[in-house]
Image (tube, rainbow, N blue to C red; front, top):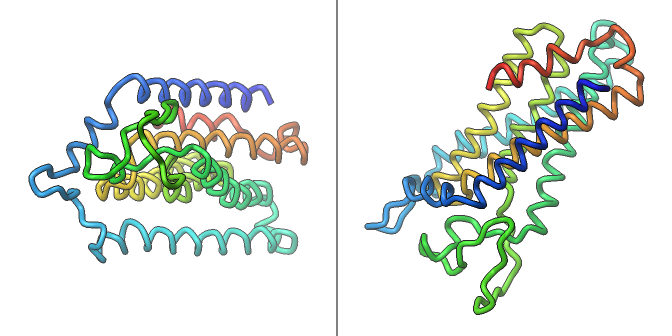
Length: 245
């Protein structure tokens, strides 16, 4: 488990470093200003645009649900289908990740109480700009708890980083990595363009998703004693992440 622990520590350090970066700078506001037209007080992309919503939001969500059903079916069939048997642990990691990653992010959103770009006064809303570690000014009266941090919808795409632990060939692992990053960042960028999230929201979701996946993998390997067999070499899988970034 030393390799998994090493990557968990590294990923956690990167997460905390990114949080500090966004807390100590105005990077979020600077980037979000690019997507907002101050003359007409509109975001660069209209949230009511049906085509963009279908492609970058609804379409990706449906694709995610369909893939989850296929993978879950594969997990159940792995007990009876011989060629699927070799993938049973990977399928278990992916299916658990597909549930726990979005659920964990949603749970955090419920307690962080951080506003979206569209909600803050700088972009025409009524909330002051506060970050994850900041408190609201004493003069501000908050009517309802707000749920914007971290980015929830992107978590579905990032949960598919778990596919790295499903495939055995390096090229397939790399394809899984790029596919998950594309889906996660497509949704995350779309949400930024319509004023629903800051960059830090999606970055945090991406890193948290990966950390949760590593923890799930560690639990599965330990429970089934996979790491102590020759069935799966974890090192090439993890190197895909850190050599691709």
